[in-house]
Length: 219
Ligand SMILES: N[C@@H](CCC(=O)N[C@@H](CS)C(=O)NCC(=O)O)C(=O)O
Image (cartoon, rainbow, N blue to C red):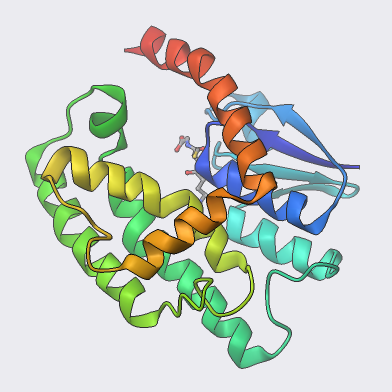
């Protein structure tokens, strides 16, 4: 059986978890924390989560795991078969990751964990997030899903990155990133109605106290 290594507070972990649930694939969740110990690095070469355990070994990097699942289990497709449409979905997912997720991530510790991020990093994040959201507004179709009329890998990145980026922008810069993108807001509301998304949110809420305790013990 497929094994999903990680913990349910992680947004990347939850992207893969949603893909597995949407595809209806049986999988086991293995609680596994990121780190640099030899035990962790034996499973995840950069010490990050998630990792997918398959019959032959481990697969790391969310985008690669998602592509693997698509090739290995095409059933409920999250990537179009047609090459141009597939490229559009992958480009949208990559844009969300590079231009929204990663700039926002640089400020997660201040926005969500009460730590302090240097001003120069916050300035860069603000600038990058505005460019990232403008990119999404330009390229996303929101018809009603990010890349068109069906749920795709782009929606996984959208759902688990954009709300966190909005949280960073609101808390640190007083900005509403989706103010001029009502279709994106509407899509978030639609996705939140999905039973698999609700299950993941409930699992995350249940994990949160232990996660915060762990973070606080390292401060
Ligand atoms: N490029 C990785 C990023 C995954 C990632 O950043 N995971 C976070 C948890 S949400 C993590 O492992 N953080 C620990 C660290 O950066 O050391 C992927 O796509 O899977």
